[in-house]
Amino acid sequence: MVWRDAAGARFHIAPRFCDLPLAGLAMVAVDMPIGLPESGRRGCDMAARALLPPDRRASVFLDFRRKLLSFSDYAGAIAWAKADGKGFSKQAWNILPRIADIDSWITPARQARVRECHPELVFLRMNAFRPLPPKRTPAGQDLRRLLLRRRGFAGLDALARALPARRAALDDLYDAAALALAAERFAKGEGSCVGEGLRDARGLRMEIWY
Image 1 (cartoon, rainbow, N blue to C red):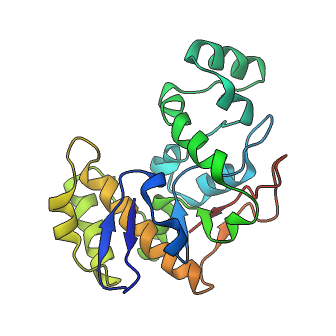
Image 2 (image 1 turned 30 degrees about the vertical axis):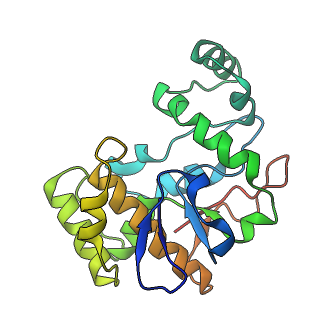
């Protein structure tokens, strides 16, 4: 994750959500589901997919449900998921611990400054809703870097040099940088979301901002 210091002069990298200096941040945008249904699909996921070009829709994972956080093995999770009507990918299973980390901390009140966001939607908005090349291609990375710089993201090259190669790829850094800029817009009262008004059983809003 990427955050800007209190002086507003520099951006920094935080490897994990728990490493963010949350008490000192005005707004946080996180690319993780916040608010989980007991069953079925989240409407915000389907709405986010509908906004994206066909070749980028799969970047919005589907079928996260609260019960899945209670399983310790994929076999048990996928058996329950299929019985509930929708399967569950191994890739999605691998990020469940991160979702559980946020879910154990988040509350409806904390959602006022910690919002679910999706980098593909943020970049699409930055590019005037024109489709971008895939993010792992040279053309896709060049355009994303250009868009970030145009919006005042200073020190991007320095952050890239400091990025631990074993923990994240360059496209992950660009995604996190886009969310940092989006969070600054949200703090100013700007931005849009899909799924507005829908809540899970814990009262958490199921919405995606961009």
